Each structure stands twice: as C-alpha cells, then as structure tokens.
Image 1: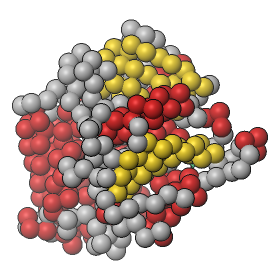
Image 2: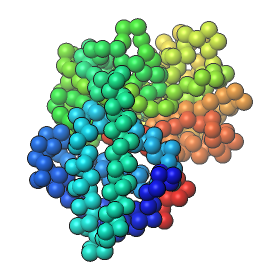
Image 3: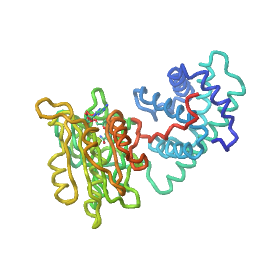
Image 4: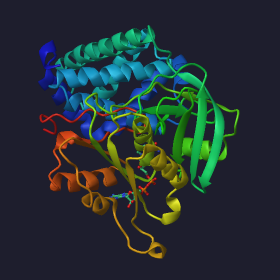
Length: 386
Ligand SMILES: NC(=O)C1=CN([C@@H]2O[C@H](COP(=O)(O)OP(=O)(O)OC[C@H]3O[C@@H](n4cnc5c(N)ncnc54)[C@H](O)[C@@H]3O)[C@@H](O)[C@H]2O)C=CC1
C-alpha cells in the first residue's frame, strides 16, 4: 500500500488513538451497522463475539502491514473471496466503511481529526476495492460455498470424530489445504478444518475434528451430526502443500489433529512412482489419543518408503514420555528434504525452534497460521509494532 498514496502515518496515528479501546470500536461498529442498516444483521451469526474478534484481527493485520503492498493485497484478496460465502455484496462495503470510521471517531476521545477521517476513508476505499475485485474475479469460476452430504461419521473417542463428506459439485483442492465448515446447527458460523485426504476420484473429503470445550461447531459436528446431514464447505485455502520441485524426503511433524493435512500429503505421495521417503511423527498427549493408528499403518504399508513414529508426551501408563520436539531431534533432514509441521501454535513453535536449532534452513520448514475464522494470516512486517 506504500505505493498507493494513502497517508500511512495518519492511518497509524488514528489507529493509535483507538487501539487501547479496540474491542469497544468493534462493538460500536456492529452497533452502528445494525441500527442503521438492520437488513445487514441477517448476514452475521446470532452470537457476535467471534465476529468482533475477526474484524479486529483484520484491522490489525492491515495497520501492521501497510508497507507490505503485495502481502496486504494478497491478504485482502483472500478476505474478499472469503466474504462471498457470507453473501457480502459490493454495495455493503460503503456501509461498513462509514460505520468503521464513525466507531473509531467515537472512541478517540475527541482527538480524531478530519485528517484521520480522510486517511482512513482513502485507505478503506482501497481495501474495499481490492476485496470487491478479488471477489468478482473469483465469482467467474468458483461458487461461494459447496453443499456437502455427510456420508461417514466415526466417533473415534469421546472428543474426536472423523467425518467424511461428499460435496455436491467437484471441489478442487490440493493435499494439505483446509476448508471452513458450517453446520446447520450454527448458521453463518464457519470454522477451519484441514482436509485429511488428497483429491480422490469419488470426490470424498475427510476431516478430523477434536471437540473444543465450548466449541460450537466442533461439538455440533461430533455429537449432533448424522449421516445424510448437509454441511456447507467454504473454498479450499492454505499454502501448506507440496511444492513443484519434488522433495526427496519429507519430515512430517503432527500434533494431535494437526495430523489431518500431513496425512493428506503422505497419501498424495503414496502413488508417485518416484515418491519421497517420508518420516511421519504423530505427537499425542495420551496413547489412547492415537486416533488414526490403523489407517496410518495401512498407509505405511501402501507407501513402502514411510516410517512412522508415535510420540506420547504425557502418559504415565505408556512408558517413556517423548515430546514432539524430542522426536523431531531424532530425525535427519537431508539436503533435498522438506519439513511440514502442523498442530497447536505452541507445538508448532516448539518443533520449529528445535528444527532451526538442528540447522534446518527456515525456507525448508512449512507451517501455516490460520485464524479461527479460516484466514491465513500474512507475516507481520518488520515495520509493525510502533
Ligand atoms: N483439526 C484439524 O484439521 C487441524 C488442527 N490443528 C490444530 O492442532 C491442534 C491439535 O490439538 P489436539 O488434537 O488437542 O492435540 P494437543 O495439542 O493436545 O497435543 C498434540 C501434541 O502436541 C504437543 N503439544 C501441545 N501443545 C504443545 C506446546 N505448547 N509445546 C509443545 N508441544 C505441545 C503435545 O505434547 C502432543 O504431543 C489444535 O490446536 C488444532 O487447532 C491444526 C491443523 C489442522
């Protein structure tokens, strides 16, 4: 955005005036929007907490990354494409912009000036323009979302279900990507889940869902979903996929249900004539949480060049405890190798630090940060946090 003439300093000044009251800004923004334009309310979920967080995360990303024109365009483009599934139309953007600036002004304690309004209005026009253009281009080739019938529901533990769905139309994706899911129990609430298989001839998709305490969508998927139900799928997202180069070796490091996209990647390679050797580490806290063992052992047999390690970190009954990071340290990554890490943020951090400490070049380590609404967050620019 640095090359677009927007006044970055005034935008950051304006944001600094309200940053400490950001949650209030978000609440006021939606308050203004719904009171002035009541019909817009039906586009949003009944409970607005996650939605408010989502707005704040998006705004923060924009403010922190203003100098990174290309990265921000990519982020906003994805945001625009993703808003198609909410039914957002170009005319809605102007309403949102007026309310956003109004909410910031209302929370700036009288310090908001015409210069802040002008800078934010110009930036908002640009942001909306990028989002609308990306959404319109996307609409030429892709539906906003897909209906998918539940064809399998396998409760593997009290708190873990593997769900199989059949989208009503072809769903083009790459192994390692994720989709956002919506259940009829929670209209307009979307949550991201990795697709646990590569593209298949029968078009089926599998998801590994751990029930998050208090998690609406995961609870509905585990306990209130039946074969024959219809879910909605947002478009495939994510860049944690195999590169075109063809690695000679893959080290795949999974924590809990972070296994899903890595399993998809192994399965993708299983049929390649010159497939890479694969080391798959699955980290679980308790031995009984190894919810996919029979499948993984079958996959190992079919693959022929796959080694599998189960690392159990907190199970006194299991024998030696091993953290995922310790299991990682037992493996070598040779020159033609690539590493993929997926799990909770803490597990990804610990594993990545260990890999870097072992001398694995950062460009060979692939991870992805997905916010709960399903957006891939861009890296924060070096200009951030002033
Ligand atoms: N369901 C899906 O499709 C996907 C899920 N995820 C994420 O993966 C995570 C999986 O969670 P659970 O299945 O509950 O597994 P979990 O987080 O309880 O534990 C799995 C393994 O990760 C290790 N671990 C967890 N936190 C750690 C930390 N802070 N430092 C070092 N090691 C740590 C544990 O010791 C264990 O070996 C969730 O955060 C989920 O959002 C990521 C991608 C896809």
